[in-house]
Image (tube, rainbow, N blue to C red; front, side):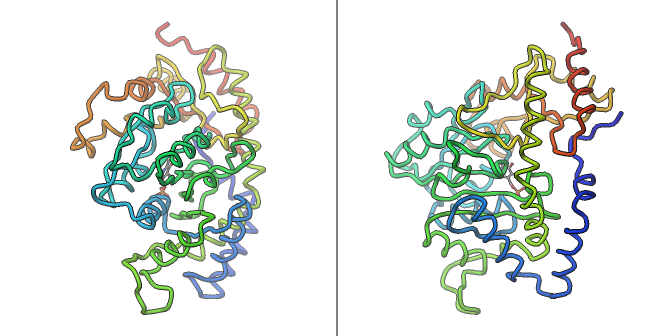
Length: 366
Ligand SMILES: *Cc1c(COP(=O)(O)O)cnc(C)c1O
């Protein structure tokens, strides 16, 4: 038995005709940048999210960078974020010259601990970049409340949260801006790099539209310092096809997560906030014998990953910020115990059962 962590080939097999048609149409039109496929996807994704504006960009990382720029955040500014995320969340903050200020996580949800946020706010604080980690919503309503109290901007890193909701409202639509990644392995993945921002604010939208296209609205009239960061037509066409399946795929992921939660005896798994729906981008369990279990599962043909083995404040690239071991004990403890299991809608029931039985049959060093 071989169970990969992700199986994009079998996803493609289900939708290959639609994808091939969509890509062929782009090729026939020979219009590859800022064309009708992007318009259609932006409109469709905005409708899906229940938001006014969507703007496609090169990647999730670029989406975060362009958002910070559009809000005027840069050198001398502090931006509050979580100690546990994919590195891109903070790379964007440092890329614009701002300083990331980390907050520890809640050890059960793995999300930013909202009770610790206000301690980190000072005169330099300009914004927060909360993450909906693993596709489960963070305490975004409380975060927006704190932001309003102190006049801070909120950029939601929804790069793992396509279709996630909290109180029936989509992740990414609570703050000033929401950012999505369409990296191939995401719940809504392109056939290359891609990303998008969403907002209800027309002036933020117009600024980001300008920044992504060399700082112009009229060709060769450059109003602001921009860059080149556009979601291309091939990716947009692929994404429009896959968007039609996203709800169905997410609902299968939820069923798999339920099976894991019911089947894994005595295992701690990610706690999900009440009145919310995770899109289960990643399914995380905890064990004291993480490395042994990963090795044991590998021997049984089951591929697992760790998201993430090192919290951000302990990454070498951020040594200069001066954090040390024990700065954020919850994030540090959890990164030694978490293990991500395969979860995708093509994962077959017998394979799910095989994974559950294998984990339950593991004796580790107990
Ligand atoms: C994937 C991801 C990003 C970056 O997206 P890219 O499209 O790979 O640049 C940012 N934040 C989080 C939490 C992610 O998972």
